[in-house]
Length: 107
Image (cartoon, rainbow, N blue to C red; front, side):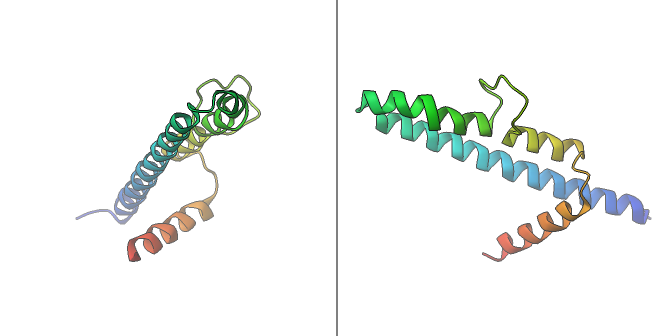
């Protein structure tokens, strides 16, 4: 017989796994779109340099830790790591995640 506390822990672990997996997929999709934008901008060198200096690099830094030198920003990768480690400290966050997963499953 499965202990109720153990069953609940297994369900939470599965939910965390699903959340982290979905966030990784979204992160990869967004990084892919950045690469598409870079490809489009290759025909426009001046605009490409400006975009890389500002919004392209800022978005990449917000999604990953690549090229990020300071600690004043929380990246998407930081958030994924916090969820994996269970460091979110906010029980409401898990309820919101469950709701989002259920909503997503309806479509």
